[in-house]
Image 1: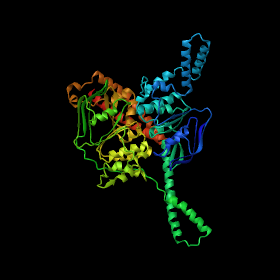
Image 2: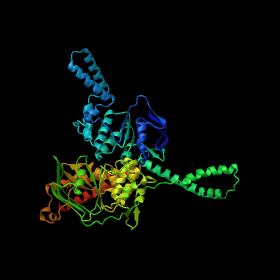
Image 3: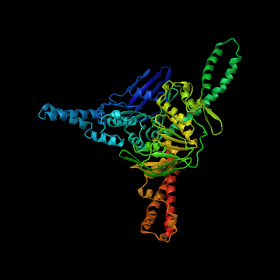
Image 4: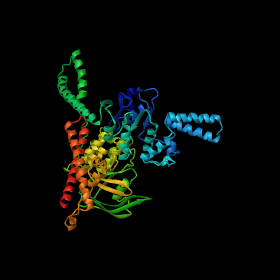
Length: 627
């Protein structure tokens, strides 16, 4: 059943053509993602599909009776109303039925013997039955709790941009429209919210078209990827992994065609130059064809891979250490008795729910905030570069390149060469005339990209990035990842983008609430697998190593009762369970699978299980020697 069809859509902004003659459709149960660079019209296209904006040409046709829900990047609410009032002001049939019932109930309570009021209340109750809306307020409160929103807030004007985005998401989920059009739904969500939303949207009866930069989200939710490039739309039936394979094949074919056109162009150009003045019909046709060959031959393909070795300020042996640090803001304890020493070159991810104190921790280690207790020591050569969510204030009439050159004319690279401001801007996809355009012409994502560059050109040796991927397109994120992979200094990342975290960090600080912060060695995916493991395995894996001084003492030559029980648990439960997991995963890998990411997931799980097995086996040997 087709829900929506768009035919021959074109859109121009001033003298800029966003797209021309686009065609797409979405049927019941389909989940499509729109992928494109910033500034190419993704949000504009979603608005046109949702009926919030009109196209210059073409039309959008929706099936009769289909309800469309649209999640904007920057939702707007009635600031005079509270959270619950705004949610109950929606246009969904279930919400309308609740409002009518409340009105009828008030009228009935005011005049309980009025037959008209009794009949109206009965009809309103039947509507609640029809839409299964009796528990709508319970559902609302559950979703508000899930997305960390306080239902008692009476003025939405006090909400942050992230809170408004989450509130709009809750409103959409309560409305349950037939077709959901979502613009960056994972922005301002923590990792747990992203994973929960991914599972909710993946349910087969939901129909979705979305824009997101979260690659794990794309992989887990979407069955079709729509790529918008150079004003055209390419459709790939499959998940994000399949899209990457097919996109690479398409680009390879395009490059092959360009190379062939270049060869032909040289031959035709030579003929054009020595062609006699008398032009026959045949020669004129050849000249016309030459123009098409020339256009193809001179096509430039942009390679967004970034090789940029920075010459940063030297890091000393002492980087950053926290000794028994505690901090309480208001009545909320955010950090309690935390000690940690950052090693040179360490790449640390910080995870935990929104509002738990992650951004506060970043301010604390930079000296922006002072701890209530404990000491924070920083190395003398430490130079922080802090990318925060609020961004920076820029003069709207200032040229983009001047924003950079006001800080430095160039950046010095590790090989001794220098990279000028314009070259640096080009490497971060500020191409053509963009470096010389005023800041006012930049999109939200482009402004964030410029903010990143103002940090990089200062040559920091300790980068702190708080949600750096918000509002960035996939191409820009990949450029940023390429740069950060080569960055030789220390790195701290707070991000809900799980792929970004997995690629760039090798250890975590896990914020668990009530001031507790737990270090973890490994990637986010490693931590997630361990978290999902049976508690008895996790308990063994994270058991601290035995103290050497205790091992040499006579008192440990015999097993205690607790150690005997531990040895029995290892022999009878844990070792057999891990061996069974290893055998199962090895069999799956030997059988193969068409989905590369699934194979990679099995391989990762196999490696984790083998590591657990080796650690438990070591513990078994220690206990066996003592028995």
